Each structure stands twice: as C-alpha cells, then as structure tokens.
Length: 390
Ligand SMILES: [Zn+2]
Image (cartoon, rainbow, N blue to C red; front, side):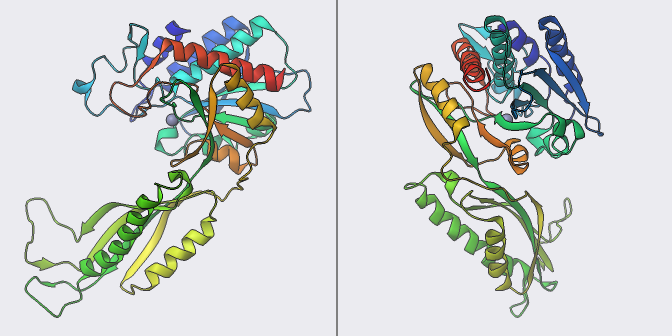
C-alpha cells in the first residue's frame, strides 16, 4: 500500500497537464492483479473516470461509492518544500507529497480497504464502487459534473457516497463532513463618466463601487465575529476577490484620469440552512440601492436538500466504524465545497471523511500523512464496508 501511494504521488496530476491516464493505468494494473471489475468511463472531453467495482449479491440494494479526485493543486514554490512534492518520499514514518491529504492518500486507503475486505471476508451484499475523478480542484465542471450525467452513472444505482473531508489534527477524533456551503460567484460593474482627476462634480464609477463593497466588507466583519459562537460552515460569507478600476495599461498608469468603469468579483458562500434563492434575492436588494452598479452571477450550483438531522443509517454506520478504531466523531459543516455536491444534487446520501488525524495542510507546503494514518484510514474504510455493505 505504501509503495502504491508512493507511485501515485510520483504522477504529477496538477494543472495544466494532469497525467490522469497514468493514474488510471496504475489503478487498472492493480485492479487486474486483485481481480476487481473495472470500467473506464469517457466523459466526452479529454478526461475519463475510472470505476472499480466489487458487486454485491443483492442488486436491489443501492450501491455505495467511495469517491476520490485524482488531481492535485500545483506547487507554487518548490524551494519551500523540504522534499520533492512529486517524489513519493517516505521518511521516519511520514509520507510526503502533494496529494497525500488531498486526496491521493484517501483514494489509496479506499482501494486497499476493498482489497483487505476481499481477502478477509470475500462477499458483499451491497455493491461497492471506487470512483476516481478528474478536475475537482478546478470546480469539477469537467469531471464530476459530467460524470453524474453519464448513462454509466445511472447504471451504478448509487444510494450512498463518501467523499473527502479534512484531517482532524487531533489523535482523539475524526471529522465527518455533514454539509458544505453553496458558492455564488458574481461580478459587479459600476458605470460612471470618464473625467479629469481634478474634477469635483463627476460621477465616479469607482466611488460608487467602493461604497457598495464597503457594505459587503462590513457584513463580512460581523460574520467573523459570529464564528466565535457558531461553525463557519453554517454562516453566510462574502469575500471580495478582485478589484479593477478602469483599464490601466502596462507602463501607462493614468494618475489623473477618472475611469468610466470599475469592476469587482465577489465569492459568496451560502450555508446549507439558507436557500440559494434567498441569498440571491438579498444580493439583488442590496445592489438595487446602487443604480450605477449592475451585476452578473458567473458561477453557482444547483440547490440541494439539507437534512439538519443528518444522523441517518449511513451516518451511524460511519460513526460506528470510526468509534471502533477508538476515535470520537465530530460532525463538520465545511466552509468549502467538493465533488460531493454533484452526488448530493442527484439525491444521493453523502458525507465526507478524511480518516487521518494529522495536522490539516490541504494545498499547503510539505503536505504529508503518517504511515499510521494511512493504515488506520484503510482499516476504517474496511470497517465501513463490512458494517454497511456486507
Ligand atoms: Zn480535494
């Protein structure tokens, strides 16, 4: 298992040239060796999804999917890493590399859990699929979003899905992700008149935009205070992500020109307890107070149902599996979203679990997991398969 993860880490799957085909080849070789069924599902773009299957005896039961994404985020500064991020280095019980936590380490633990189950028990009642997805880090639009619309997805009869969470950073508990916030990414453009920078009576596009953004920033300040009393994943947030006043051409900064436009982009995250429609209505009402500003929603997601009492049979099975390994469970309301949302949109019951207790370092420098975590992760997934599918 450790060697396999090392090999996986050595395949650079960061953009712009993620080597997905090499990952699929690696898992297919292993699946053939272990006698698992598999299917390479072409998404009709340049990407494919690999599905590895262990069929259950009762085909009427909705299947369980253990899902992971193959891509990783790029390395910004190689020199700040103590080990080659794509070297698959193991040192003193620690496995270093981009993707160890997010989420190659999880995918390997899932695979070896199924392999372990096969060698120990052998037969399933409920079918288990392992799913390897491309493109999560860019939003899943060329990966999971296409996959859930594929005819093969329907054939898989999925009832339950497990995707990523975050490491707990504490040796006494694990997180189970029970909800994610829904993004609305919007751009705002303020229209004024072009004028000389010395003028007093001018309709300044930037000033109008700044006044509007000030409202958002004040709201965000309040929400930061609110995180003292409740999980951030249950709060609405607004972050200004870019600002541009006119077009300042290279080397020609016009210090004395008032531009006729000013634009900003904003990343809004809507908690599961709030409807997307209510959030956009609120946004519209706010923008309407600034007649010079128009806006466009650039990206958002479909609405999905949220059950505040998430402790269904599947959740309880996950909880039992974690507790069996002498760890407590802390439900996690995640601030960000993952591929899980595409499964949820299809009415599938899903949660996120990263079965590692190491310090959370998603997308960070010197990302690592311990060998102990990897082995425990495999055993927890194996217990879940036994408890929920055997
Ligand atoms: Zn991830």
